[in-house]
Image (cartoon, rainbow, N blue to C red):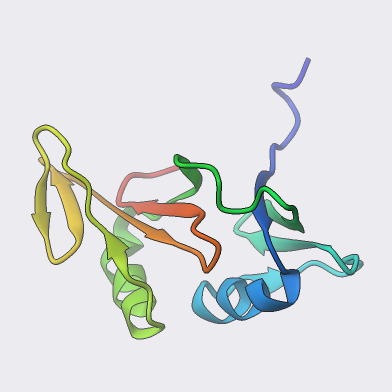
Length: 127
């Protein structure tokens, strides 16, 4: 029933006005026209990230959005660092952490948070 339809990542924030600089500036996402005062869609490749205001913003303790960057991983991570993203480190079995990047053999992954504490991720795998 849903297999032929695109899904959207959905992220709750306390204030869309305060979240915009992060999603547009740090992440470089482009707003989709027609946003509401408390809801904004952003283009992310062929997908849409929906950011909306909620009193429950930042309460998810798991990853909200993941970007599969493939060969563009290193360049994207450098750009995120230059924009001030701070990478989280987690104690995970078999992970080697190098400068905030978790390495699992050939796979590399970073996690970072938006201003409301939502956990976002990027990996060097292909989507």
